[in-house]
Length: 216
Image 1 (cartoon, rainbow, N blue to C red):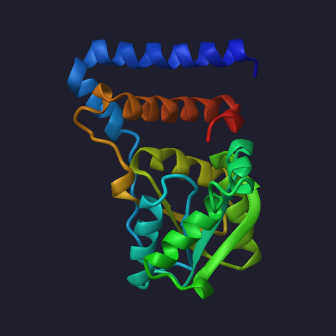
Image 2: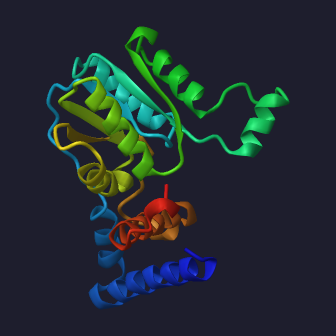
């Protein structure tokens, strides 16, 4: 995808959001756009709890809470690709750990013992690659069900990507990390939350257009 095509896709998503807001009324439309991104499954005992990369430490805390409830005997930690600039800070001693190490340490701090952690060593950059890799690990371990812990606004895309990328034999239940969410009322007034919502809609559009390699 060229930079020009990507910019065109971004502007198309902005225009869709604006059109919906005008058609449905400002606040109700934006509120609906936020809540439409959120899906959550009824949880059942599983073979593993998966902490999706990003959203540290909220996702780790939520996953650890599920582990302490006894919903699964292990927690999977995927390996978010560490950018070169962060690796440089680690080499300089300014930063001590990469993203996976930080996630592991937070989980241990929240009561998940090291023996219960499954570290996926292959670095992943986008959600599609991450869930494909987790699905392969689940298949190799003969797991039948996993719980996928992510942010509320990221949950619909996670559900869709898992259905497309994971083995059909492995059920994926989506659980939310509420502390890593956005405010349904007023997210459009905060730049960071507005960018997160736009990013998710761009990611969903990219999935349907088969260009999702550009969206984490």
